[in-house]
Image (cartoon, rainbow, N blue to C red; front, side, top):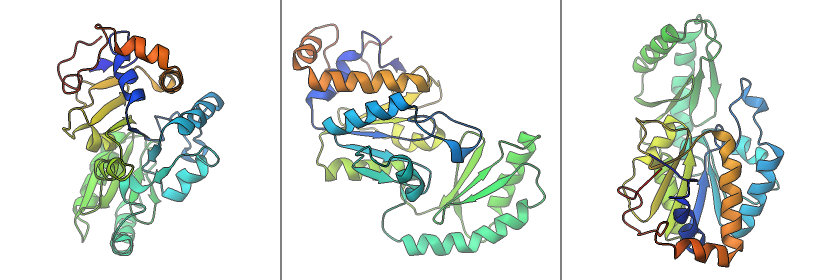
Length: 275
């Protein structure tokens, strides 16, 4: 993985600023810090102001594991063009079918986990998230959740996260599916996606050199993302850089014409020198 804000890689962002690009972000852990109480999650004032400026210059999407209405409320007034919830499911086709699936599995899962200390099921209508952040014995909680999901009457896809297990219908779209749809609908030549969790690997594992730039919050050897931010606070530096490069054509041109930072489209995602 390469640090996207290093001098060796800033040319990648400059090329994006000159292109027809869709910018897409996860919410929790990416635009907003992770907090113990998910209801209190919010962007810092600086991040919010920068995102407003970014949305004035680029088409932007937020693709979150939260329900669409939930995440849309946290983005109100910012100008995000596409707000997608439930890991890519909402809005989309077969919503009624997914709701019926959740109606079947929800009570079964609740009964199986009812006596498990510190475990809570969040109902997002088209998917479920099992939280175990408050469990004292997290390893046992994970094992019990996995066993309960395996015993459900309908097959479900489980995507692990940061002290959560996301339970979604097996045939539902994921974040990668919806990102490609949004990129083509814009239309955009390339998409930048920024995420921080296991659910974002559905985007990071897509192999489309020159058409998708994947960026993870936090360096991780097991992630398929090609670039990273050191931590969530660096999202502000990334947004500020994207604004500056889009507005300042002279600065952008000086970066893209510098041989040390020039973007050769098929190489930056695999073999370009990094830092």
